[in-house]
Amino acid sequence: MIKETNSERYKKHLRIGVRAEESGFVLLDGQPLPQLHPGSVGEIVFAPECFVNQKIRMGLTDEKHIPFLKRGSSIMMGVSPGVIGNTPQKGLIRPDLIRVLSEYMFVEVRLDADQLLQVRGDQVAKLAPCPCSIPALDGKADSLNHAFTMISEAYETLRRSHTGNVFKQAYAEDDSGRWESLDDLRLRAIQKMLLGTKGQLEL
Image 1 (cartoon, one colour):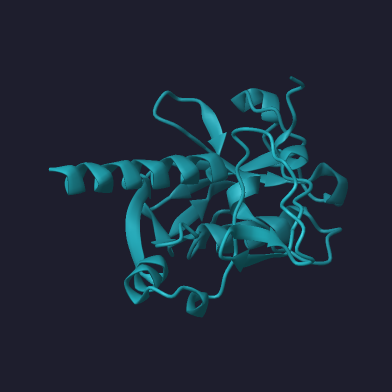
Image 2 (image 1 turned 180 degrees about the vertical axis):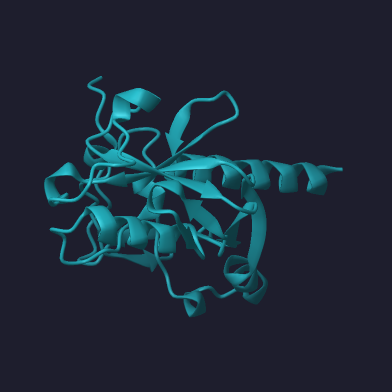
């Protein structure tokens, strides 16, 4: 299998319209769903009011905070070389220095508090506000998303918009010391939460 860079991995997602029938899901024109490879993972998006069972509906919309990254952790925030203007290169870290296969250059961000995930019952997750520092800019941010914007404004001066998906453009070390995207670490944290909940229910 060809190993893809992080950006290539998430380059395309196909959104397929479906409707619920008594027999299961079908395409909007009534045709059956296309055959998928075993192990394929995707998401089904519905408005909460589509769920008949109120208990299930409430469970899917409830939100909880779970541990994600510890205070003092270093986060490597990705910036695209193609939109870096004539700015000082201070603070830019090459991907090979952290053993990450990526097209991004990186700028370090340090967490000044524990970073939590806000996870909804349907497993949609977002980063809770968390103060952090950007050593290369000698600056402070209210959250990793805020830090991303500050870094993009400072380095990616050729970009028109300075927003992005931090989960896919930032990396942190896992328990083994390997750098992984926040998106992969997010999935692992949610899985840990779900397995823990399952264990509590089985006691």
